[in-house]
Structure formats: C-alpha cells, structure tokens
Image (cartoon, rainbow, N blue to C red; front, side):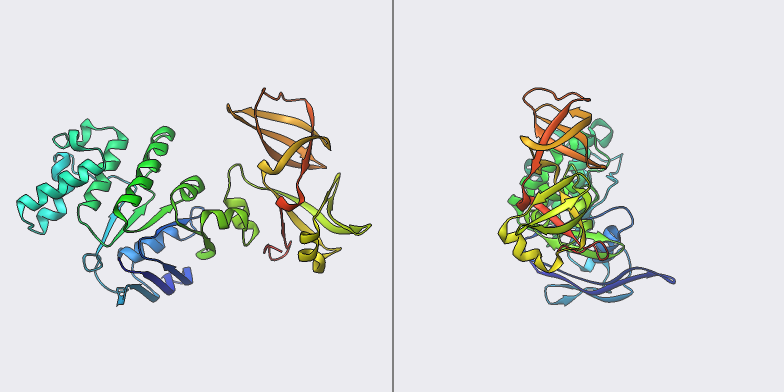
Length: 357
C-alpha cells in the first residue's frame, strides 16, 4: 500500500483559486478524513486525487509515481460517491462485479471476489435483489462493495453517508470502521460531519477556504487545537468562546472576564506569562464545567435532556455558554446552578490571529 503525498497542490477555476499550496502526507494503510464546512475544498481535493478534476499546479504522488495528470483508471483507486449510482436493472451481484466484467476478469474469479466482499459487508442474502428492493443502508453497502471488489490500493469516499438517516449513519459508521480494520487499505474520506471524522479517522485534516488548518489524530485535534477554527469545529457540543483578559493578582494568573475569573495552574502560568495583561479569547468545552456549590451562579436558560446527558444553555457574565452534564435528574429551565471550570482544561487564542497561545 503506497504512501500518498500532495505537494504544493493547487486548483484554479478561471481567475478564482480554491486551493493554493496544499501539502499533505497520508501513510500506508491510514484512514484519513478531510473535514470542514461546505466550500472548504475537501471534495475538490479528493476529486483531484481521483483524477476527476484536473490539477492546476503541484503534484499528487502515490508511492513513487506522479499521478497528477494520469487518467483515473491508471491510478489504482476506487471511489464511493455520495449518490449510490447503482444500475437499477442489475441485481446486487452484477452491480458489484460491473468493473470486473468490464476488465474481462475470469468468471469464477469474479464470483469468488463478489462472494468474499458480500460476506464482509453482510450482503450475501441480497445478491439476487435489485437496488429498488433494498434499504438506503443496504444500497450504500452495495456501492462500497462495488469499490471493494476491485481490490485497489486506495479507496476514496465522498460523503457516502450524507443521504442516510441518523440511525443508519451510526450503523454505517461502525461498519466502515470495522471494514477499514479488516482490509488495511489507504482510505481518504470526505465529510462535513465532525462526529464521522472523530469516530472514523486515524488522521483528521481540518480545512477552511482551501487551506489545511490542522492535521493530526482525533485526540490531538480535540485536546490541542492549533487555532480557534479547529477548536470550534472539533467536538460536540461545540466549544464556548468568551472574551477575557489574563490578569495576575497576588501571584495568581487568572483568565478574567465580565462576571468570572478562572485561576490557572503554575504550569499554565509559565506558558502564558508573556501574554499577561492582554485580551484573549478563552475557549471552554461544555464538558469542562463542573457543578460545585462554590462556583459561579449560572442561570439555566434552556435545558436539553437527552437521556444520560443534558446540554444546558446558560450565561457566564454577559456571554451565553453551553454546558454538558451527566443527568441524574433532569435540570429544568429557570433554575440557577453553580459551576466551576478547571483552569487546566481551558484554551487560549489570540484575538487577532486566532492561533492557540
């Protein structure tokens, strides 16, 4: 399985540059997820790797081969699209084997390969059915099976779960994760859903306006976001951002804002000493709030009870925040609760550059 490298990749549409100087390495057997809001360039990047979009500049290296200007069929890739794109007049077996039959592979080899992949995707019982007789999740598995039977070196997925309902998305995420463990191939997956990115990716690449904001493991991006954009994009519910100032009083450095002051540990003080007496943006995960009788008085504006957890909408000072709590008993709107925030669990960002401090 080859390493994939995108080197100074560029894509222009006339006078408009949508991707400029993009550099990324994807290791052997790695599940890489490109994630970001609509229009960030993630699908364009994937389509350039697939050969469905021309490259305006830079290189796409698969192993030692420069495939930047090769036809899609010459790149040893298989792609699963957002639209299932199944042939309605063919049954599942014929849909899955279509590319192999075009390549005039031996009939017995085709049959063995289709049965093997169908067993992996739990489609054996549906091989004689046509797409109209299948559920949405089953059709998506057929689309994946059509790619997998080709035994390509790299598999590309362009938002394959976006047409499914919430329950099916959860099931298919689990199946995709198990499939990637079994087949150990290079996979590049595009989504705008950060939950899919976090649960599937070995590496997550967060993109914005055609640029990579940060690339790393799910844990790295969650615990150590490089900038405010990544911090706000990764994690659900999303991170709270508050205006504050780093103030030292009595030898203790605190993040102080309207109606709150969060003391920081000596380790954080040493890291942030150079930014003392400066305005900053303070980032607090909803899960970092801890109910404590000695904490801030916080009115509950809205309580969203979702079973084992509740998401509370409250105010800290004059700024609205979300709080995630484990639910023993439902917390009602209109109550006032007291919460503290652990100083080691907050994040700090430069107000001008939005880079992490």
